[in-house]
Image (cartoon, rainbow, N blue to C red; front, side, top):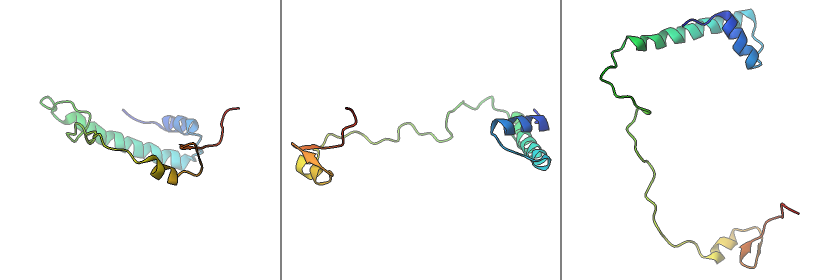
Length: 95
């Protein structure tokens, strides 16, 4: 696959970037170099490689849920800006 200057102009227009001719040429060369490097991957024999979604073998990195006592309401209300009848009072958002 090869990127042409017209492709760079099109993407720049979509991104609302104002590129001059020198920048368009520079980005065209850079993108083609990236694509050529990526094409080297096609030379590798991947027949015995299992497809994966991540390079690290992580299954579940979350901790186990533990049932434990919550904070007492008095302690929670100490951090509330305002409280009423044992509940945190907030400004009304509906009429």
